[in-house]
Length: 408
Image (cartoon, rainbow, N blue to C red; front, top):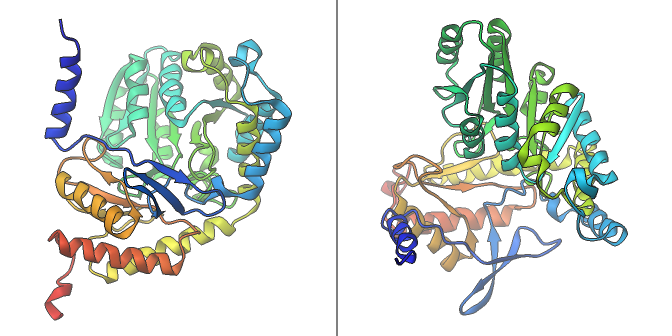
């Protein structure tokens, strides 16, 4: 039997649906973000990255880089094992203390990625609650969906940010244990959940809350703890999950909450127990970034300022920018093939890298370019982005949001 045919068939299906993902070979340059080097078959070429999740440029912060390098020289490159078998380094313990302090919780637990912290955290918490019903927002990230699935519990999906539908499901559930899982910032549409109102419902109907703040930690709130901190409702959320790989600029994920819950997950979660721990140098770098953003609002203010300027520039040019209250700037295309073509043209003709966002990340017909301005994208780069997008939209005959060409 030719087993290769199965894999080739799967790839052919993806390509026919315009869902095949092509990874761009990039080389980040320390201290020069958002500049990067694109490795092409024809050689190297300098480009500007406009879609990074290193939202504040902390992956390029000199103090974070120095902390990582110094710690690697002090502790070595690896963790040495799982947390249970020689991998429970002092830096990871200190990082967890920083994170529990950040969110005002009793304890924290660090995982190897934000995906794993959701997948393992949700599934383990729900499994430990007898008869638990999971209520999950319809637009939750795949890591949360997988966590819900692996929990093996009964689930109910509420329409995105629909409080009436959530309340209806809570009433229908009665007195059984319930876990509401949702995000603060939804990264594809850039919208925000009504955290306080969801907490009101949770308290009224006896549910536990699990909030994913991965696209908000570092960027919102007086100390960068996220939207829940900004809105003054952080203490009302039972479990807050976050990542170290976006605004904090390193890698890893975590959950925070009551000490008993954290200890129970630590003791039962396969995705935590049976994997090598984060290396000490990574933990030192992450803790350095967390501490910096607790004290500094310069990066947050810079990001919000530049995101607003990008929105203004692109909207003024008649481009179909989806309105958002956050740092996410989606530009609607609405077709998978056109979205890929726009991305390719921006990169090849203009040296601007924006990855196309297609199904299944977003529904078919809502394909888009997702732009993430940082404090390091200056006015010249914003102007170049605007001009490149206008040229690309015109060349590919993509629809503008306004009849900007009618007067030209």
